[in-house]
Amino acid sequence: MSTTASGKSGTWRNWAGNVTARPVREVVPASVEELRGAVRRAAEEGLRVKAVGTGHSFTAAAATDGVLIRPHLLTGIRGIDRAAGTVTVEAGTPLRRLNAALAREGLSLTNMGDIMEQTVSGATSTGTHGTGRDSASIAAQIRGLELVTADGSVLTCSAAENPEVFAAARIGLGALGIVTAITFAVEPLFLLSAREEPMPLDRVLAEFDQLWSENEHFEFYWFPHTGNTTTKRNNRSAGPAQPLGRLSGWFEDEFLSNGVFQAVNWVGRAAPAAIPGIARISSRALSARTYTDIPHRVFTSPRRVRFVEMEYAVPRAALVEAVRELKAMVDRSNLRISFPVEVRTAPADDITLSTAEGRDSAYVAVHMFRGTPYQAYFTAAERILTAHGGRPHWGKVHTRDAEYLAGVYPRFGEFTALRDRLDPDRRFGNDYLRRVLGS
Image 1 (cartoon, rainbow, N blue to C red):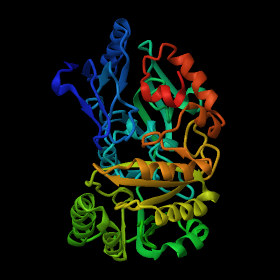
Image 2: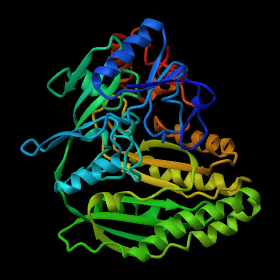
Image 3: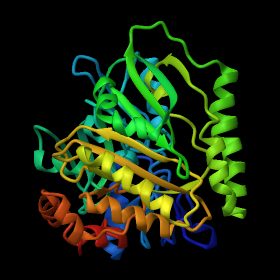
C-alpha cells in the first residue's frame, strides 16, 4: 500500500475540472486487507474516507477533505462462472479493461453506457446507464457486491445474502461503504448492428414511441438552435460482423466528433454569437452510416472534448413534452449552446436510488463546453425537468437536495435508514452526500 500526504500536488480534480478536493492523504491499497486497514486508521484519526475512480462524475460525490482512496491496484477479474453466467471483478477495474477481457472470453455485458473510461465501482455507484428498451443500467446487471463498511469489516450481498443491502448498494453513491468487488451477469458475446442517421426533431418526437418500441436500443441527439437530430438504433444481429473501416471510423469518431468539434467549441466560446450558425452546419456534418460489431465497440465511443453535464430521468411518457419545452426555452432565450442534447431510455428497475426505480424512464442530458458559463442553461433546463418529476443523475451537475429527492424516490427512507445502520458516524460522508441524503 502506498500513502502520500497531500501537499501542493495533492489537489484532486475531476475529469471536467469543475470539482477539486484537498485530502489529508491519498492511499493506494493493493488488497482488500490494506483497504480495511486504511478505513480503520481513518476512523481512529477521526477522518472521513472516500474512494475515487477516474473522476468522470461532474458532482463532488467522491470529494473529501480526509483520506482519498485510489483503487487502481484493485483491478482484474477474480473469476468467471460460466454456468451461472457471471463474472466477478475487482472494483478499480476500468470498464474498458473489463469489456476487452470479457470479449477475449467470448462474453459481454448486456448493456453499457456510451463511454468506458470509468472504473466499474465508480460507474455503478452513480447509476451510469446507456439506452435500452428492455435492458437497464450497468448497476442493474450486478448479481453480487463486496464492500468494506465503516468499521473496517467486509460485507457481501446479493439477492439471497443481505438483500436489503443489495437493493441499495448497487447504486450506493459511496455512502454505504467502499465497494471492493462486483459480480456482474454476463452472456455469450453477440453482435449489434448500429444504424445512425439524421432525422428532423419534429419527426423523432412524433414517432418516439414507435422508434422506442421497434428497437432494442434507441437514442437521439438534438442540436440546439436547429430542428435537427442524429438518431442511433442498435439491435442484435446474426452477423456477419461489418465493423467501421479504420479510416471512416477515425474520420467520424475522432476527426469530426472530437477534433473538429473541439475547434468548433473553442470558436463558440470566443464568439458565442457564431454558435447558432455553427450548430446548423455541425448538425449536418455526420452522415448516415450502418455497421455491425461486438457490443462495446457499438455502445461506446471516445469522448475527448471536455464538458460539464446535467442529466435528468423523467417518466418515459413525459419525454416528448419535456423536450418540446426545452426547445421552446432555448429558442426564446439568449442562450448559445454548442453541445447537442442527448436523449436515452431505460426500463424500470428495483434498485432503491436508481433513477429508473419503479418507472420506465427517459433521460435528457444537457452539456456545455468546459470553461463556458453553464449555470443559466442548466437552471432553465432543470426547472423544466423537475416539473416532470425528474430525478437527477447522481454523478452529474444538479441543485437538488434531500427534501426534493425524498419526494421523487418512494424508497428514499429505506436508503437513509440503511446508511444510518451501516455508517452512523458518516465515515463515508462528504458535503455532496449531506446535501442529497441529509445529515
